Image (spheres, rainbow, N blue to C red):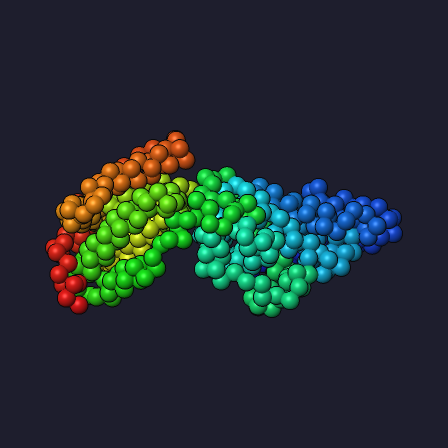
Length: 464
């Protein structure tokens, strides 16, 4: 096998040397003739007095994306080489600046198709790797400079801040060279990486719009008022409980901490709902996309859905893009994301402790065991979280019964539930329910046991 790889590499090097020599020869002919030169596959290399460098770069870069989509890797490589050489003798800095500007314009188009910063970076990392994700963050930082802060949604700004997007390069025309230095590659490598990002942008389909894109937002709007009101101090208490749940090696303690976190979130949701019921307070449902990765995507989505349901939210899974859109009120969605992340860590730990599995014939059944384990875990956790929420709601109703307006709690919660349902149906009219099958009884039993070991009584957590 090693010999074959070596021969293939030598052949590719020989082909590249031949193409380089042919390209140099054609460039010399083009300069002498003073007219456009048809190089290959519809790619045109122009002399200096031809079209603007930006137009040429855009044409060649889009040809590279189309070739990649068609799996014509040789043509895609030729496009890359054309940009490295400088179409029509264009200066490298001019080519690099035009290519970086093209990516920023392409990103603006991606925003118009419903994507948000976290979505694009997640897709880049999921499909193309960590380096492509880092370059995508850079393009986001560069593109964001176009907008006045007053026209950028607060949630949008929070995503950009959370990913650490910042302009670290000196000038846009030197970005390619500085990127190559940062990543330990050549200018040709950096151009290849930018073309990877451009291709990733081209593969972003139209999705649901969860908020205004930059340049069209208005600070303090109805859509962002609820998100801005989320009490970070309360969420910090929840985070602390969940961190304890993840750190302990005892299942009973982990479930006690998780149950207490759910109680805090349910109580917080109730307080927040009553506050938002004031006519002077503006609030409405919002959406957030949460990434769910392989392996065992379907059971993980089931767990997220269970947590969301217990916290009065709805979920819709877009499986081909690797995310779940969670719809609800801002405080509830923040709680859902926190608890889901923690429970997934706990479930994975418990699942891995079960080790590898074999069937009665000695064949590996680990995959079916783990899928069934996570499905059972999600199902039972959903039941227990729903019980905790119901208990807190009933207790809150009793506590408020003797207070002015205390009887409004259940109608307020019902109205918020209807608002979330209406938003889900309006945004996803064609969504369908999907069942998850169980193929391993041992995995199902183990997963349900892992979720059912501890009592919902969270006194152990309260005593800490």
